[in-house]
Length: 228
Image (cartoon, one colour):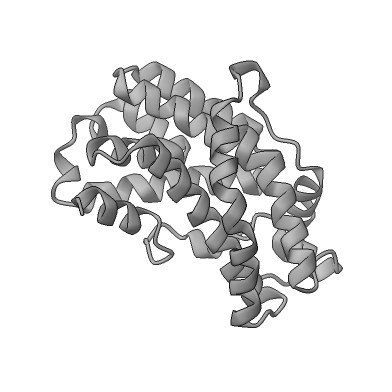
């Protein structure tokens, strides 16, 4: 088994020090309001975000950013990253996008092999990575010969696992219930990645109004554990 497999596991690990565990992407308010109260409502919430945002926006943009990296198109990488940021509908979702991007770039700076990558010191490439985690993630996958399919699957799994971990704390939900929610998604995740391949440029965008509402209300939530 190649090193690429294990490096992907490191990139998508919940223990990766980029602060992913501190964000709920509006889910904290949804739990507070009663929109999410058990495993079934959690599944419905995540399924909505998966189909309305991940498949139609994040995964297609991740592929386009990966294309720009492969063809050394720094400006294209920056433009797609900026487009992703513009699609974030609330101030805290935009802040999360940038904070996670900067944290991921800072992590690459500290890895001996990655620290010498010329993109990390180029202002245009670095600007793209500081806008969105997708750019740094795609760059690492490119440098470490991780396939496009594995890149998409890994990124999608990382998002889903972090959301379920957050829900286990928030609802609260038992660990076994959390694992059952994850298991329910496993048959669909590969299909979701395949669907993302078919999204045309003009069709890239998000349609998750409930998440946008929850996130905007979370910004003024009186008592909260998560940053978004």
